[in-house]
Image 1 (cartoon, rainbow over the protein chains, first blue to last red):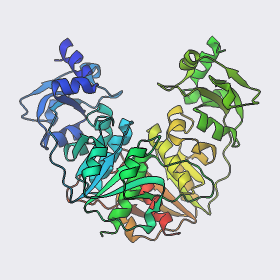
Image 2 (image 1 turned 60 degrees about the vertical axis):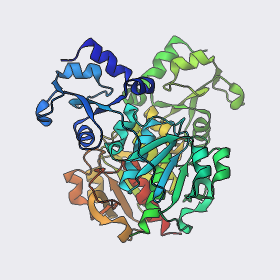
Image 3 (image 1 turned 90 degrees about the horizontal axis):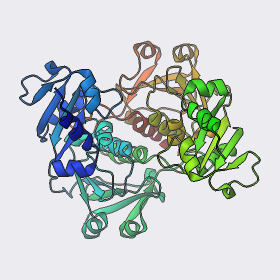
Image 4 (image 1 turned 30 degrees about the horizontal axis):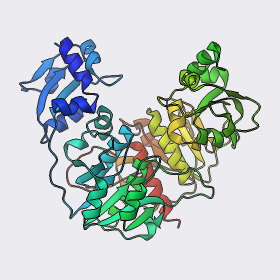
Length: 243
Length: 243
């Protein structure tokens, strides 16, 4: 059973303000919910059309599909919707390769980046304070459960990079070719800028050097690659050398 | 000036049925519109809040921003909306590396794929008939003008691959590592399957061999990479060998 208050409450969790206020967020879909249950995140409430998928869960509520449609953020809801408690971030491990994101705006991009980061063994992602929130339902959806296992911190990126002793590697259209660079995945921070504007002048000054992905045709189009695709190519190029 | 009929007509172009019926589609944003004007596509009508951006265009109409909001598919419209005529596809050049997409569903994924394909010098993309239409406004948006320069064909993919003499390379979770394969970008077709299900059994039988991207950590998560990120990594890996 879904009450009017449940609907109102869950809909409010679309917004960061209410996620922070209530210290919780939404995960949808059987696979992702299972991954969050198996992680360090604490399940608050699970609404299931088919409760046999999650046996022996005390805080599970059987609902009808038309009720799920009222609380889901998806056009085609996937049988389950869960509320999880927000989790405090852990200390950042500076010995590894860290991904830094400045002013990322698109939730689909952030989710896809998080998913690729996990694939390539990244443990820590740091985001500027004005980046899209990783508990945004669209980020959760695109990240396919990876948020449950990565440490994602929001902080003043300029200050963090200034103090950090790691090698700060920028990504831009005018950097050194990734195919001619020898980047190691230790004590390094790989920085990606905003989708439309790239890395800000403020951060650009702090960066040790810049990497770019060569364009494989003669004209100057497209102007750039999608940020999540760029990250995937660059992480692939760094990690392939470790095989 | 935007009439009620304009609003009704433009809104109908969200749907493939009406794009086909009227032989036209919508492009938004100054940069993308400029790229389509500079290509082989024919401009039918341009609605501009700021008509000084496109001087000496006969079929340009100055409108107010609140009128643009009524016809735009974007939450934050970008000053210009154009109607272009659909274009017939050209013959496929089998000598190059061709990208084949089976049952791609997400318009953002297709747009990002098209953008990456152009970056890596791909000329031809072939899509199964049930794939999302490349003139879908969300595809146009994510592809950032690249659709104006690529040849994108919709066809019976099974039949095409059966007849084709090119090397058919699949992409899956159980293929040969891309880092241990020597793929050439001539006379080859690189096949990507549906986002959720991968390549269908029907196509799997026709494929010569499969490639996969190794996972760089010990557990089995995430289950897969985003399709557009996978394509970017694989194209990067194929093209880097040509430098």
